[in-house]
Image (cartoon, rainbow, N blue to C red; front, side):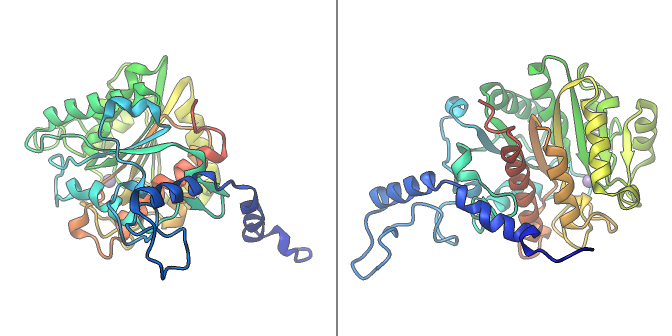
Amino acid sequence: MGFFHKEHFEGIQAAHAEASIPDTKWKEEIKRGLEFGLEAADSIQDRNISCFSRGELPHFAGINTLLKVPYLEDVRKVGEYDVAFMGVPHDCGTTYRSGTRFGPQAMRRISALYTPYYFEMGVDLRESLKMCDVGDVFTINANNEKSFDQISKAVSHVFASGAFPMIMGGDHSIGYPCVRGIAPHIDGNIGIIHLDRHADTQEKDMDERMHTCPWFHATNIPNAPAVNLVQIGIGGWQVPRDGVKVARERGTTIISVADCEKIGIEKVAEIALEVAWKGAKAVYLSFDIDCVDAGFVPGTGWPEPGGFLPREALKLLQLVAREGICAMEVVEVSPPYDISDITAQLGVRAMLDVLATMVANGKLPKK
Ligand SMILES: [Mn+2]
């Protein structure tokens, strides 16, 4: 193993790297807080503290958007931002226990405990990106197809503006309308990297396009071919044979959890990038929270043991986001079944880790 050099530790390197990150935006936030929230009472010694909470602190206070970024009421102005968090509270595509309509709210709420700084990567999102939360799409929760139309229109609007769509579901049926909203703007093919315990490739489920069906329909979009669909983490006792048949016929790339253990997360990411990007101009990232072992994500509609450890899933996301993605969705966070918000928290981590990765690799901001 050679000699021990503590300066090679990631933690030590990260501690040094922090010195080079600016704090300009943080200072602006403090200034705005003091202006809008009034100066603190005389007894408060830290004069950065305002009377009304108007910024990051305290983490338990304030009106929650995702990571407390500004709420953008006028979505016509979304193009002024690098990243737009958007909620898609649709869950009538759910085939077992519902509740993902509360996913965006739960992720916003628990995101309050995060700072915008990611230690290991040496990235401070507040300093690097102009982010907003555009709130939720008006989904029609009695009708998948009408919701799909609303979702496609909303995602298309955000994507066309130049802002990066960070989409918070909702159940997995939204994968299809999300890709449908982006695909027309891509000058060439779009690949899909899909982390899940379930294949989600059947045409219909109980006569409708449910959350078991997004990739059947997404890969019918002419510039979203199935050969560019990579599905990672699939396995167990909830993979419908109908979907497996379609995946086989269409030639999607399915990688199981055991495959990941055998060849390692790094190699899997390499293969995923190769397949998804082959002849493609953009790659869409779909993260179903249930790809993580059920023990870590109780708050989901179809929990299944044997999935990834949270750190494996996060590592995989970081590795596939290095090359840049065109948009991301986090789906199947179902707060009514959650415990201590741990499922929603992992959903937030997934989004923030991907954003930090894109910043660290020069993929964001886009302009
Ligand atoms: Mn799933």
